[in-house]
Length: 347
Image (cartoon, rainbow, N blue to C red; front, side):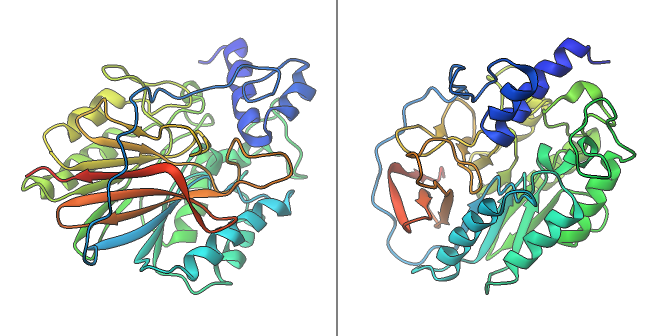
């Protein structure tokens, strides 16, 4: 079981993600990660980004947007306004958009009221088919009382992790599991989901727990890529350092995850969770056998100037011989300088 000291430490981190650190400072009287009084938290992406290359000529096989960390909140309408900015850009985009992937943390507290708000926003636009995976915030209803008050003392407040999974699956039409895969224009998208949170597994903290069943499912799905066809794998929490398993705020069973992907030569992994801006930061990690890109956030991207919203996501194009990844700023519908990578496929 998790100690109370460790629990409080992890709670500070999740509150910082939710509110930029201010709420944690008020609640506990000390600086939290993400608070201006605390040092900035940087994920382990030390490898310099390669120089941008020209995009491929001709039409791509697949073009899509990855929109991570929406954090739709019943208590903060400005978060929904940010998703509106993103979807206005996506629905009027100058190039093709074949699908949208929502990369976890769709809502702040995973309540019906927030899913209803998300449904209303999505319904306001003509969008291509979309898919999603679960993040840690998609389990957060257990922290709230029936009156909507945040309460650690009474957690799980009469709720369960299973209720959160069922709510997510119902919203996206998934039948049995919160993870799925789909082939779009001959390109394979594999979406892994966090399967448990602290009500069922207290020790996972804010980490992503994948069961034996889900990892065996991933291993089976990867067999389709023995010939080198690109596989696009979506996770929420980032990976820990190579050769290690993760803890809170990381993919927990990372050694097994890496071992499953290692035999395949054209694997692209996309994560979210960190909320890092694309501006002047590297989001392409090359320390693995696969290519790993860490997305920014639609609802709560860190950085930006005071009074100016920052709403960022990824646009990905898969060509027969390469994959192009670009960082997008939705507030002014612009590409972000330095956030463009072209990765040739290995033959």
